[in-house]
Length: 213
Image 1 (cartoon, one colour):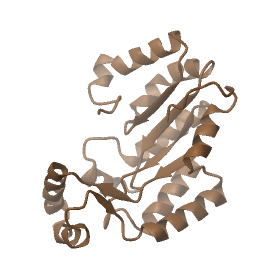
Image 2 (cartoon, helix red, strand yellow):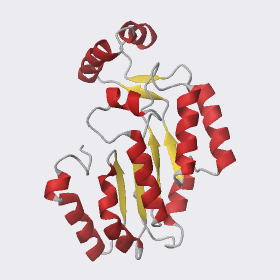
Image 3 (spheres, rainbow, N blue to C red):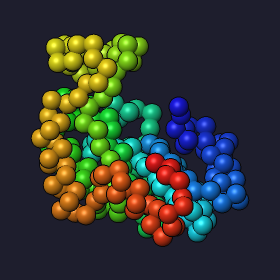
Image 4 (cartoon, rainbow, N blue to C red):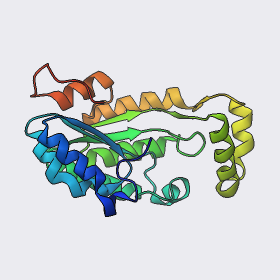
């Protein structure tokens, strides 16, 4: 699995070429990315939108660029991704946030979740789809713990104590954060249930479109 807007895309334009073919053959498209480079292709996305649903999901898990540079050093800062959502939304593209993974003991706090919701709303996001935790396979766990040792040296033992060798490492605060999340999203009119997001991006295209989420 690879981000369609990986570092090579700016030079080679393979994703843009794929979008142009999608438009020619009149398909819809769903895109998940961590890159603001997607705004380069707004013209093609708008062309596709004329005949088929378009859904864009920007992964954002921290409202802080400082923390983001530590946990995601090779991708666009969160502020740039929020700006990308603003540009997409201003051009009529149904866009929102994948709030996952929310890293336990790093991102699973009320200030971070509330900050993401506020910035999502201010930048025109239509939805936020969350998962309050992270999954760790064996090799992933070894690599992840190595990075924790580099940047957050007190957390390895905390993970071991809390999760052991579990694949699903759900935040201990998941229930409380979910309640806060739903309350704030309801207040601001942001979608967060899968069925509502699907209904939202397909609105106006009839009932014969396949789900691309």
